[in-house]
Image (cartoon, rainbow, N blue to C red; front, side, top):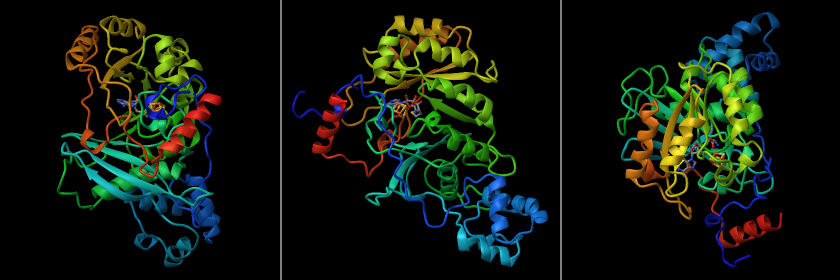
Length: 412
Ligand code: SAH
Ligand code: SF4
């Protein structure tokens, strides 16, 4: 092993496909009601003395206050009895992830650092990033599903992060709610005066599960959270406006279609297995042919509900015209959209973004094959909020730690 090699600058070794998840999580003393199903809320109400016959109606009220109005205190729930308003906070909270930092990009993109209950051993909190990308007509929230990621895509900053735990359903819904709190995006709320806010009635109109983590490796929590986010009696964001992005966890793709029913995005990034094995090491487990088969069978996919294929543009790695043609051939017969993502560099990354000219040539091939406007404009690069740049601020590895991690990877 070469001395003084920085883990961030070496390609993922073959045996380093997945890091062991560290499920070291200290549950808060009082749990938050966020993320609970209606059935769980009915149990909570039972504990607080609500008789069975009244529970359904009370659950409806509670749901409305939490998810439609965005109540942050039980005191605000004026349609509920005083006794219940007093009993609930004895055992439960309405806590969302705590926003500990906010950055606003010159293009209006906002990035929040959100703090979550932490680590059982060191008592350190965990944190995740959540990014709001406003446009004139829509506002897209990019939500995280894990602290870090157990996968090691070589072009992704999150993939270099060591500390990993799955987020709970409450923490996933909680990011949406904390973002709406910050944006005044509840009935009667006050919008920020800086940045960019879309013209319509709502600030957050779309959700993308494209923040930190692999959502299909935290399936149950992501499903439960997205069913709450899309519930028409609460936050009410339609499933057609929710996109889940996966690096290709094939067995859970079909489940996502059946159990969540949201839009799907696949991080494809290469048209050949040898290259994809390197860029997205999970490809060794689920190669391209299997991945595309799962896409062909994705419930609900149609020309009106296309699957997005993401393709990060890496200079001299995957950006040749031959590869553009192969991409179009590969996706034939799948109702697809193609999204070319200019590579967003991060400190220590070993790739460069393709030249603009090359991106245009590549995109022309894709365009000529019938796919509209395929290049995604990078947003929030100045605040390090663009795709693949997210990483917890608490995750600052010392050179020694990186060296140790590298040694572990080599001896695995
Ligand atoms: N884990 C999921 C979702 C999070 S990543 C997934 O991999 O799909 C969201 C998107 O950003 C993915 O398509 C990912 O491949 C892409 N991405 C990661 N790092 C990037 C980078 N440095 N520049 C551009 N896109 C990147
Ligand atoms: Fe994880 Fe997605 Fe980054 Fe790959 S691209 S390391 S799956 S977050």
